Length: 129
Image (cartoon, rainbow, N blue to C red):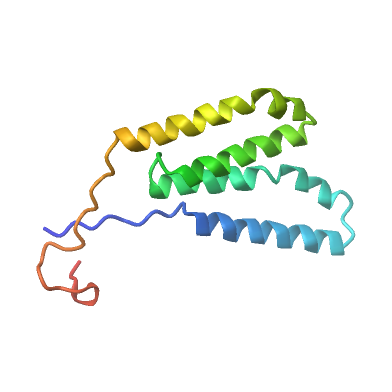
């Protein structure tokens, strides 16, 4: 029996595309004279946070890049709340976070990739459902 896994829908490409749509809508609302359209821009840290989560979901929870995006989003949220002192005081936690991710990467072996097909010699175009 040929069981194929469904590809992830929640990907960084999807997040990037949705972020571009949101930016385009903000620009359109601004051009139409909608007051306060740029006030919505204060939610920009949500985009790197969701991008990081999508990266982690796609490449595994030990992917360092996804965690870097999440840390960037947290720093952006602290800046939005006018709490730069949180970054100045708690930056060592980010170092611990990075160390924990690297340690997990060393301890947890990567998951094996499933074979594309059970039939030897069949290419992607020749697969049967």
